[in-house]
Image 1 (cartoon, rainbow, N blue to C red):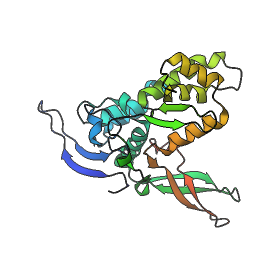
Image 2 (tube, rainbow, N blue to C red):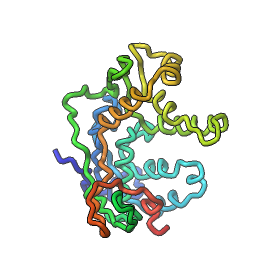
Image 3 (cartoon, one colour):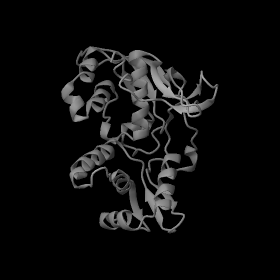
Length: 271
């Protein structure tokens, strides 16, 4: 099985109501649909996405949607033509891959030039990234139960057994809203993002599933070394696109893998 995001031409989308038809592409999800319930259309492991039109450009330039922070969600809602897909159910690993696929379909594989800095000599340079070379991380799906988005980890220090889930788009929206709501109560310069995200991820602690117990544990009992281990394991077991590229510094010839900088140019290349 290829580990690359597959974009396959599937022909025009035809609606029985004689709505306009557009070329569509089949986009394979990094999760292969493995962690969605059987009745979710995302469980097949791919979606059909139409190519961007002037309508989607209107969405991208809507100042109202940009201010609300929902412009990219609205973009995906407009581009995905697979029937019954709920954007809120999209796992973040799949959602990020769809953003890359949408960008490639709209503007091509060339992204940049973007500003990067060598981690050895700190020289800054401009790079053009080929999005078509991004690949999915290797993943052993066969070791997991299809249709279940639950993972278990025994915390290394406290030895408590934690069951957690991969976050989806709705979880991310809830986290953002909660952070905004609590920002005025947090001391200047502080943040509750780590604990808020952990509370949303954790499903149970030693088989206790009530939110009060989970929240209390995260706020008062979860040690940093256990928190780090949990967050690291969650990243490890998340099937996702490897958003890094090979970088060679023109100044000192240092070579490294570098994360693709996500700037305004990604969806607004003329900015």
